[in-house]
Amino acid sequence: MPRFVERRWEGNPGAVGGRPARRSFTYQAFVPDLIATIDPQVSFRAATAAFEAEQAVRELNERASARGLEAIGPLLLRSEAIASSRIEGYQVSTLNLARALVDPRAAKGGARTVAANVSAMEEAIARADDPAPITVEDINRIHATLMAREPEATPGRVREIQNWLGGRLDSPMAAAFIPPPPGEVQPLLDDLVQFLARDDIPPLARAAIAHAQFETIHPFIDGNGRVGRCLIHVVLRRSDVAARFVPPVSIVMAARPTSYVGGLVDFREGRISDWVESFSNACESAAVHAADLADDVAALQRDWLERAGRPRANSAAAKLIALLPAQPIVSAPTVRAAIDTSQQQALVALKALADAGVLRQISEGTYDRQFAAVDLFDLVTAYEERIAGREPAVEPDTS
Image 1 (cartoon, rainbow, N blue to C red):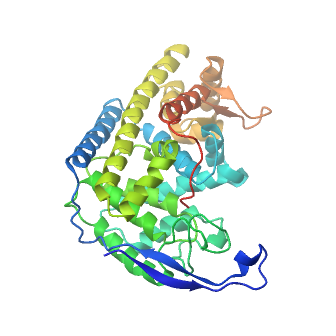
Image 2 (cartoon, one colour):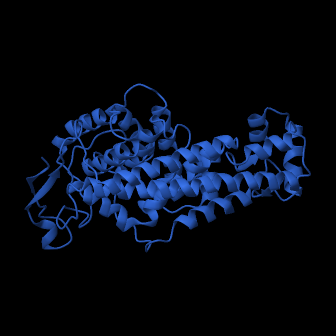
Image 3 (cartoon, helix red, strand yellow):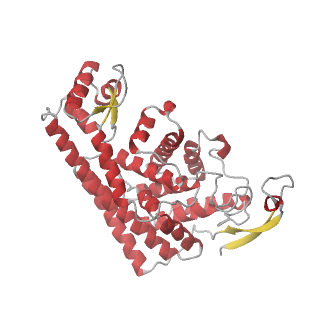
């Protein structure tokens, strides 16, 4: 059974912030139930929502694959990383993220943080594609990738101190939620990975429960929300529901922050059915919109081909148009490497597409010029805005 455990917080007599900052007090930390052998009982509504979400995710994979849109995967991954980071307060545009991914060393601020989230998600997906059981060490590696440039967050290491959500920064006084004490974290993570190995629970319900349990454990000093949302991709990718494309469910969560955090509270308080229903509805919405995006990208590529004068299928220009959804910022060296052509042919293709309005130069000067598929960024921004805007953009702290 889940339980609260009482712990004592020792005040610091020299702390700034008045008497509350110097007080010693007791607090209640929450320890969730183990889930490795859980038999979740969900309502008919929740089961229906999970089934419909599963069908929507399957349709996304089928539609994108049928249209040869393998390049839609990186687009969805970037949208997921942007939204997952937005939940934690990091803002970056799709264009700025793409720039950060092209030149990580020059990335700064929010773009660098979100680029690290992309790397963490790529690590998670690579691990999901490995049939071996997920381990706690795998989760730690995802965290290490995410927080590689933030040593104060002890990348890849389970916390050894108490953390909390809300309230004061210097103590858990008035915290909205206090996760398990450090000594409880490792056994809970061991239990979680046992749950991840199960195949007797439908994928959407399994992803919902795993994510909520991870968020409840909050095993790291920072980055818990983003790692927890990576786990959603791990679960769905390992199932036969989303073998190639996982919808960016974080876009829906970021658009409905109150519903998202309320669902996590439902889970902690034993209303698993309500959380599974809410999570499934978010996944279905993300999948439906992602399938529409796949169609829009296919239409945009057809338009590009028309604008470029219908280049031959094996020409550098046609190959570059096929590449752009996955690599929307390009230069002669990146084109040469990606489509296996000469420097001269890469330059000719870039000029042809720039003259046709498919690409726009975004760098200064004439040396090592960079070009962007601006229409694609506009398309992705419109896609994200279609999902967003359901609730005020005041994101709760789920870090």
